[in-house]
Image (cartoon, rainbow, N blue to C red; front, side):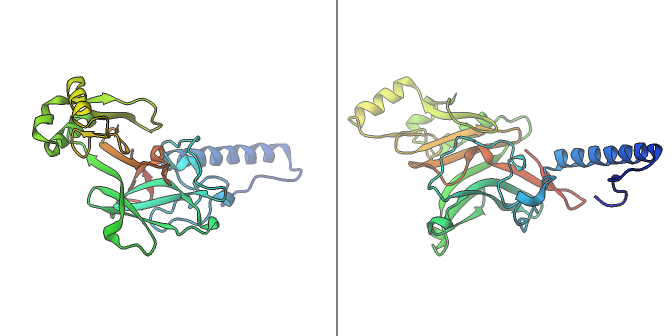
Length: 255
């Protein structure tokens, strides 16, 4: 706080009232700014270093994300949650929280955006060996996330394209609503018989698979396709938050 400081000692009654009123107004304004901008919290002691792109806290301060999964399992005892940022454009970024397990002696991960995908790899690993964790698909005007997801059926086997549909998915903790591209009952029965009880896939690479966890998320302006793999992820799928840089240079939540 700069300028006027709240009185700490005994002052004249009139002066005290004016001072407290001024402090209250300044505090309200600060809280309003923090809510709109999701910026560094009022107590910066637990903030950690500022991230180089957005200036947000490197420590995973909850208010920086649309949502977090408070029950997300830690990969090891000494792992801690940190804030990660990846730039999409000079004025757009995705912010999410990841586990930093360097205290366990683990090699840190590097996260990057390649086209419409967020990928990660261990430091020192070649870029072409990075793993996909998220695909983000901008929605056209009046388009739903489900409609955008159904377009990916063009990559599915031709005989499956008309036998898959978008269905709600239960159990996922996300900022938006979860759904998946799933085969019809008839198609699922056929695939079960054809594969003799072995794991099978349906509805293309953005559809259903028995060998990994993947699903879609509906947001207001994006359809997000989450690729969690087979093990507990080192990132929090609930925490993906889009940020945009305003004309004043400040980064604010954009959905």
